[in-house]
Image 1 (cartoon, rainbow, N blue to C red):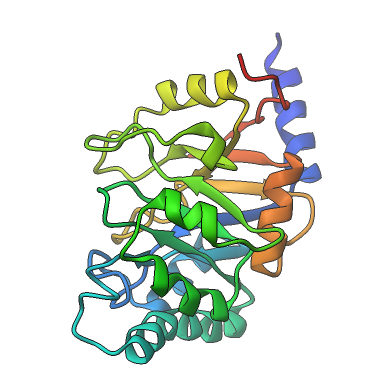
Image 2 (cartoon, rainbow, N blue to C red; image 1 turned 90 degrees about the vertical axis):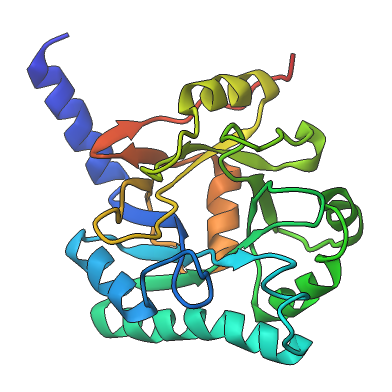
Length: 250
């Protein structure tokens, strides 16, 4: 295979899927582990020419139900980072989209969810004292997309396939081993939809893992629909990766 052919292929793929989307980013103070205020995140992603960023701050029992805040204050504080990021994004042409990274009392597993709005952030509060299985059995919304984040990282337990819409294969957080090769093999075997994300928390690590789309997603529902379509590319450090087609579970 000639280098000319590879360059042509990359150019054609880049032109067909021009929009660059971050699916996994955290801001401070909503995510205490993040060092990045909302306005700084937008500046960093604008420098990388990213078109849209999903704010997926941590939503855990400790941060919400056990924080000592009232339900109303906990939800308001959580959403404040999203609103600030959205306002900053509007000033520089970056679309900011609402997501969430949920964790339940049963353990350290994390789950990303899209196809949601602000009212859902309040509704999630009721499930923080239960398990992921409880959440999946009792919370329903047409079009929502639920996936396990970094499932093969240390201390994680791989969730049952039947409870997931997808799985984060390429988690590019540089301070963790997410075992992306094992994750990739797993999603092909199980027929899950793969995703990519930077898991952005710290300066200098922005935009390490991006989705490439044909059209610019503008809402959380658009993200869910895009993932369900499987019509996207994944970008890690400038490399373009084509997701596998839908396949039967073994």
